[in-house]
Length: 249
Image (cartoon, rainbow, N blue to C red; front, top):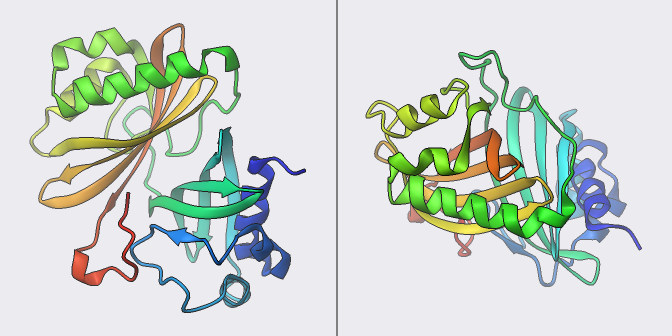
């Protein structure tokens, strides 16, 4: 039996290879698609992959995780230009039945010289998975949504390594960014918190300026603090432009 991590990688590599066997990872009869820009049922996955592979795409896995029925990955896509993605799949009986993602164009290194994908990749502290999940959820709820910025130090290491393209290293820089009217990042709800060991992915909804947005934040934890953070932010298209009825979240 393949692990869910392996199934995820087999499936997404099908974009690159056009391998029809990759489509077998998905139960198309049950598959629920949450990317608002993707139709359901209009084109079989095998046909879609065959078409995409002709554009010579590249799929690079940087981090891949598993959490119960879910597998999730932090990827780089090269579709003429580089994009950074989080991909989340829910599985039943070794087949993918539900999918979410959050993708944005790759950006130059931030003020601290960190890119959107580099940094630590080692999964450790499996026995602390639930403790770390609770910590990440509490951070997003308390600091990002409730805007209790005075509690930032309860959750983050002072020397936080930051991969957000617009924010530099350090807890102070993150706090300043969350309060920066220019960045205008407003979190409203946490929808999902996935974890494996020292890594936790929080899927949140909110606003970037006037744009309804989805925030995917990946945190690395150490000794009860957030020590590293990655992010993608994507604008949620207006309801009239959705190509399926399942919603982004």
